[in-house]
Structure formats: structure tokens, C-alpha cells
Length: 187
Image (cartoon, helix red, strand yellow):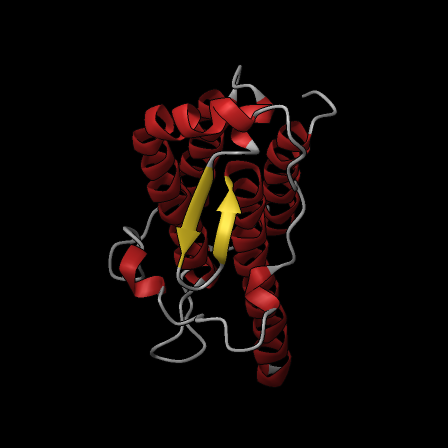
């Protein structure tokens, strides 16, 4: 996209997704849906959850945007932050709330990797379409409040979506390593 903070975040969503899917190329369906523990999500569930959480976030912002841009307009010429730390690395940050966005696809209701990849790419494209053409100065002054994160503007919130995806992609990598160990132990 462009060199703006929003463009960089959207490009990061795409590059992270492409990289994790590259790593999963050729994975057996049984491995895609393998759970290392009964209450742990599989690779497929992590991918589908990332899509659902992003969709919820986008829909939330889409509904709030008409009001938020009005509140941002009077202060649009002031400086605004674009960076935010990885909130998922904060001590005490609530990480066990994923059940709110339970995956649609599960080991009991699996889908092929191609379906998960298409769905995740489509959601990222919808995110890109939502942000496209919006004045970054307005986005930088469109403030949201989250009990766990505090106050974030719509640019920072988009970066949090990329952190969220990365958090789940790291879990995917952990599952792949656990699969390698499990396969080595069978030899």
C-alpha cells in the first residue's frame, strides 16, 4: 500500500498471513486439526479465531466510524500516536477470552486449509477496504476505550489486530514444533 501508518499495518496483516500459510503448505488435515491437549486449540482453530476476532473488530469500527470521525474532526491537525506496544505481551493482559470468538471450524467440524486461508485473506481484504480512503488524521484522533488496553485510536487498534494475529501465528508455530516432537517420538 502506501507508506502511511495504516498502510504499514495493513501490509503487515498480509505479510504475516502469507508467511504462516507458507509454513503450513502441505500440512496433513489430521495435523491441521490436532490438539496437543483437550482444551487447547488446533492450528485450524487458531487461524479461524484470528479471522473471527478481526471481523468483529472491523464491524465494531464500521459501526462507530460515523460518530468517531465527527469527534476527531475538530482536532485533526494535532499530533496523534501511531505506535503501541504489543498488548498481548503485557503482564496480566487477559489472554483466555478467545472463547468469545470461538472458531467456526473445529476438529469436529473441520475445513481444508485452503478454506481457512481464503476466509482469512477475505477478512483482511475487508479490513483494507474499510480503512481505504479514510483520512489518517481523523483515524489518529478517533479514540476507543478498551478495559484491557486503555485508550487507543483507530490506527493503534489496527496494529493491535496485527499483534493479535501474530499471537495466534506464534501458537501455530508452537503446534508445528509439538507435531515434529510427537512424530519423532513415534520413530
